[in-house]
Image (cartoon, rainbow, N blue to C red):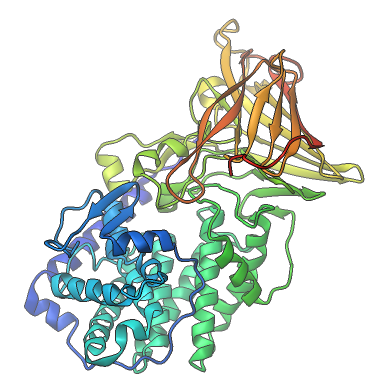
Length: 584
């Protein structure tokens, strides 16, 4: 285990905070704000971006009824108070969703004839209330999404004289973003700011300088944030997929405007598309790791098709730190890398050696996952090792979170320490594929290394594994050789899976929504079925269950025999039930 926070992390965080504070102070003074972002004539709409992302019509209908539902909270407006902009909001995350207009495409997707008028009313009331400037709603972490959503709405917002006023506001926001994009939070927010600036420059005629500045920043951020294998430096599969969707959207807008994106941006699409395929499970969604969920399946499919990269994929993402095994329609993805550090680590998970497993009938083994629209009370809970399909020691995580206090207020919820070494190797044979990985995240606290071996048979019907705990010889004898160390191996089940234990509790029957059955067996039982939750899909959280194998490891064990070695297997049985009436 290594310490993950150093002097440079603190210095960078303080510097960014001071730059933001200075910018907010200057923009809070009307004469200075007018000088920084002077008024100009409204530009013309050259083109609008394609609508790749899937709207949530249920949310749109709720907004028409006066209910804004984000992040597990609800804000209700009525005829007496029709505007949500001056109301106290439940949380900062709720406010980001509201002021970022994440919901605009949902509202406009409704078949109700009142939806376009209601959208225009909400935009106009926002301009009337906050269109001058506001430190939160004009911040570079919130502003980019609003720019993109307004551009996507196109003529619905910008037709006629009223539309010109909205367009003038959008232009001011775009020019403000040009000045402040570099102050966006590191990672996806900063990449999003560069993307929105580029998109605005392409879609709005006479705003070429903003687009050029955005593309230059976008190229820099792509070089910083996209690995050579196409993954995102946060190691979140959804971050890579969302970046691909954004870049494909930008490429389509440029093509419609008779422009060509710079070659580094086009090459980034070529890199990210294959790794997005790498992370897809059998249902078309993504594996849930490091702050990401299953993603927008439809948008991912459309973006992959438009990327024109064919079906290229691979089995090992060396820079992203994942291993993939696929056979007979079954897929296993193993986290074999260290969590992201620095400012990029505020969404990282303690998921070393966690796995996800899907079969032709659907997802079987998952991690708890995360989606940005889930209740924030769950956010730190699902970052813990116990929220992943892997092994824990003494109910602790393989990473240590920075404790609440001044440090976390400055740096965000980063990991204070975590695995210093995660190794992996794969062996391909005619009978199947072996994956083996280990990490030292528990070595400092408990003196043990965790090793996981996985074998997927060539027909995809037999997945076998082994979890082992061993003390490195070079560490010498433990302080107390009699002190046993409790462990738990968890396999979180997808909400669509029904589980039932055998009489001896050494095995379990798992039935997918299709009726396909799998038998789970272990030599380390008894097995328990406990409650769990899945947050990798749409809100609210979905109740599910998990298989848990518990035991006590010897502090001096070599991991070659029980209790420091536990073997387990998932074996396909074929159809064992009727899919009708089962949960999805």
